[in-house]
Length: 125
Image (cartoon, rainbow, N blue to C red; front, side):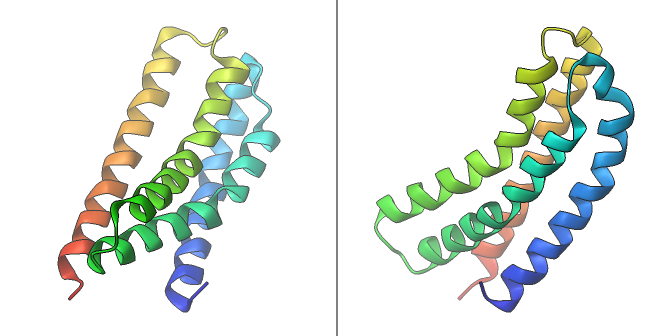
């Protein structure tokens, strides 16, 4: 991991820890183990950051499509894994508003990731 990737990983983990507080205080009543969510979220942060970084490098370097798809898949699976756990652990118990709220969070964070990715691709030489 280079310095930028390390810095990004630290920032994402800080965000994960902050996000842990509302998950721990609200979703436990629906069968979600907040500690498992936190562990998944932290464990998937380095592959997510690496996947996004390599995806930008591959696209900017005009690499063949296969490596880009591979790194994009690593980033996507790493991003989604903690949320999939939420639905697996508590989805049957969630009121519709909670399911919609989690879906909105996934869409918002996913959109932010895509926008950041596109900006990185545009600004690279």
